[in-house]
Image 1 (tube, helix red, strand yellow):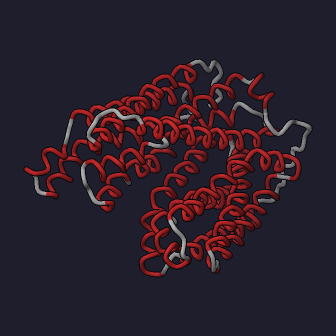
Image 2 (tube, rainbow, N blue to C red):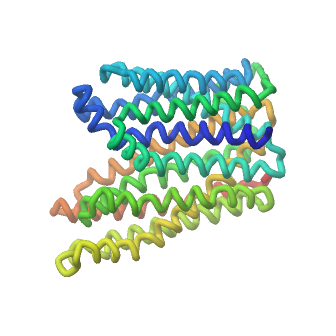
Image 3 (tube, rainbow, N blue to C red):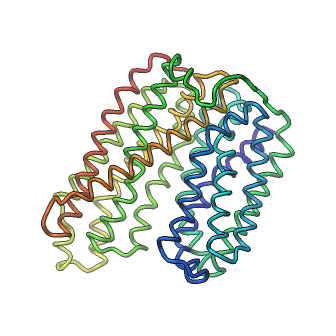
Length: 412
């Protein structure tokens, strides 16, 4: 039963990021069919993220009052229904409203999934389960563009919603059958867990470390995409294959890193992970700034340019993925292990909110740095701006080691 519950939650954890990343390559097709420009199409992605972020903490509180199982099942049912609406949408406004509703129901899954895992899985196996759950999140992000693009090309963009509907319904059926406990921990605790931040040092520093990490890593793929396509001139297909390595490494290593956190102090694993992230980002900054592949393009065949770029960048991208995997699962385990069962939902919702805040900060940092005129020539300005952004993120990651090591209590 424990494995079936884990599978249900892992499936929902896969589908929530997949539903966003799978639509990315289908946006032009959606715009062509529903007569929408790029500025309107962006709301298909933004509406989902905004409502998810706004509703996370309220849904965490609702799960404590009305039951984690009830909120989780409602989230799966609503997620299924909104995907059916998406498959049948006949206007861009209907599709955007559907995505906003989908974000609302996704917040129920974000707020309860990790809390239920923490309650169901024995403590000695908790790190592995949380690590496996983290790995499928990365798998959803990684496979979304490829599988979504495949479905869009051969079956049309509506087929993406049909697939998600079927898989979400499967997750609902498994949860409905095998989740038998309601876990009502209703309390008079406020929706914003200031008490936990004020009195729980482990919780406070772990969330701070998480926010620093997400701030330093979320926009990295965007920077690499700009560098590979706009500076080096690689195609989107070639760039996509290179960028696939990072989430693949993260997905492969996260369960093992979570298992390590069941045996070793989380603060040491998390600090080592942030150190690897900082080193990889510093290496990327140096390559972008000092190794100008574009100037050698005239001497190299296009295939050789890709091979030379790959040989230099892939090791650093792999180290970056390993560092993020070594950070995330142990840090999540530390957060969930330092609170009591009554606070599991709020801790889960808080971690998700911190993640979104860090991601937002990461995009702000990149936008600000790329807007500064570092050089006169546009190509040089972009390359230098990307290099400085990588260096800034490396420094931020290094600074995050401090609060990680400052945690005195290790419950992993």
